[in-house]
Length: 325
Image 1 (tube, one colour):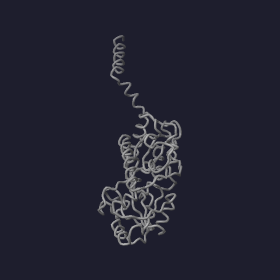
Image 2: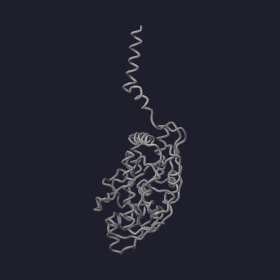
Image 3: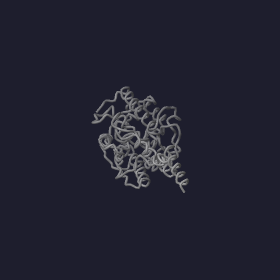
Image 4: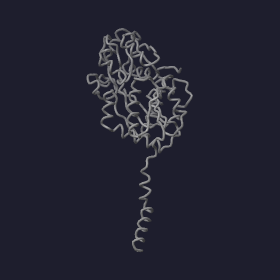
């Protein structure tokens, strides 16, 4: 009996010395919500960011067994909602689902936070495919046709709508690639901007396929092209800008950010859970159906993209002569 007890004691000592017991303990995730999780969407309900935010919230609600809500906090081209998260407790329970415009706001808006240091990037949840929307009556069916139309009529005879600085810069960069100049008509909010394009009160505007897909399918809008390198199943007949000879036009992102100061293990744990959600075939299919490409970048990769976009946005704004508000 004494020999058996001694052998058991020796085995136990060995387990602790080689780390077998601590390894089991280490499998406990660094983050599991202890209360309601809030994903702030800094735009109106029904838009592309809101749609993806609600898909993500439902999936995480099921995964975590904890309530995950979407809170729409509009205004300031997305800066009001982002500001709430910049001031939030850095514990993983409050995050913002922002778009590439957050990098552009850093140069065009007077903000109560430093965009580079106020947030901890988690991941790009999805890449919304950008499209150049046009009124159905426009005598052009693609970007090449728009270029020919503008060259025939003269610069700034046609107008483009922009509901925020990000949308305007995205459109200006496309027109820069095409070598054309259109008159900018600023709007407050995406809903009226899309409605006015559909109604022919303004000619074109850049938006995500997610935001304009239902109107495109209903024939109330048409797409003159999409960003990226490949056509998408949601708009199989719409050519990419690259196919039309205008390469280098990238898609934007729907990125999830926590407040700065959120512990790195918490960021990593949230990222891994979201990556598992994004990898699910049903979730991927929903994103694709809405005209977005699945994301899932690591925090390090997404952080690098975020920093690059802030830098490049500043350079483009200076080159195009856009003014801060």
